[in-house]
Every structure is written in structure tokens, then in C-alpha cells.
Length: 211
Ligand SMILES: [Mg+2]
Image 1: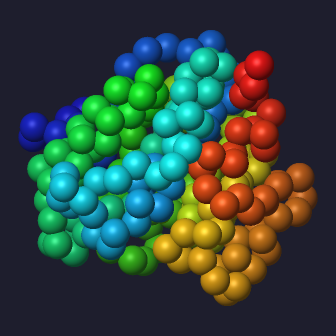
Image 2: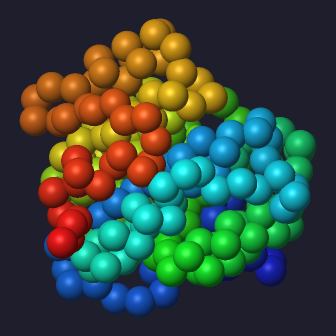
């Protein structure tokens, strides 16, 4: 179901993709957007502020090459707060996708939550967006990973039953409290590892073809 010109569900969540099919039970790569795919600038909503993070295109390319679906899962409370609209989000998304495409990298699905801070099933740290993406794509969650720059990204990965989360620990939100929160999610078969940036992610992801 879509409402209006954008791929919005009746519950207000942006759901896009996948644009191609994958074998059922594929391990997936979940990516937070702000601070992971693009530099965190605070309420990113202008195309001129889009800057890819170092290494992100290579990471997505590696997932593409390995046949691992790439799902973007992003909280966009700026929409719910009225700071910007879905049209701004759409323009920024298109700019990011175009830059990635020029570098041979493509994401497969995008889920974006407009809700303001609060306990929303479809807002991280709750796992709703990951579960919905998994259902849409047909993922093996227990073999999938998330890369995020907030403890809430890692918590969403834990809640979705992923194999692990990579915490980008030198980003905008770096600091011992956030790092400690992220690492506190580890255990019971769920791995949490700290990386300096997306360029360091590949060796931690068992499903990537690193040949
Ligand atoms: Mg982020």
C-alpha cells in the first residue's frame, strides 16, 4: 500500500523495495543511514549536505557482490517533528543513491520511521523496521548484521535476533557512554564489535565474499 507520491504505509512508515528477489533465507546487511552511509550533520534534509562516509560504497559493493540484501533502516523523527518533509527525505535519498550508484553500490530496501522519540514499534531501538524488511526480502535474521552509530541501532539488531551489530565508534555520537551502551547489548549469541568506520566492517561480516 502506498499513500500519496511516496512509498508510505498506512502507518506512516516509508517502505521501499526490494527491487529484486533474493533466495529465501539470505543473510542481510542492515545499515543505519545518518552517521553510517552519510556523515551525520544533524537533521540531514538538504542535498548539498550529503557526504558519503569513507568506505561505505566499498561495503555496499561487497554485499551486492556476495548476493546479500542491503536494507537501510533509518529513524527520521525530523519528519514527525515537522523539521522537514518526506519530499526533502526523498531528494536526499535520491542524491545518496545516485552517488552510491556511481561507485557501483546499490541498496535493496529502505525503511524510514517518521515518529518522534517514544516507544514506537517501528522506531529504533524497537526492531519493527528490521522485521518488516526481513519479511519483505526473506532474510535469515540469525545470519544478518546491522551497522550503526548509536546504541539504539545495536539494540534494534538484538531485538530482531540478528547475529551481531557493528558499532561505528568514531562517529558523531562517539563517547564512552554510547559505546558502553552498545557493547552492553552483546551476549547470548549476539555479537557487538566496534569499528572506526564502514570501511572496517567487511572482515566482521561472515556472509561477505572477500575474495
Ligand atoms: Mg545514525
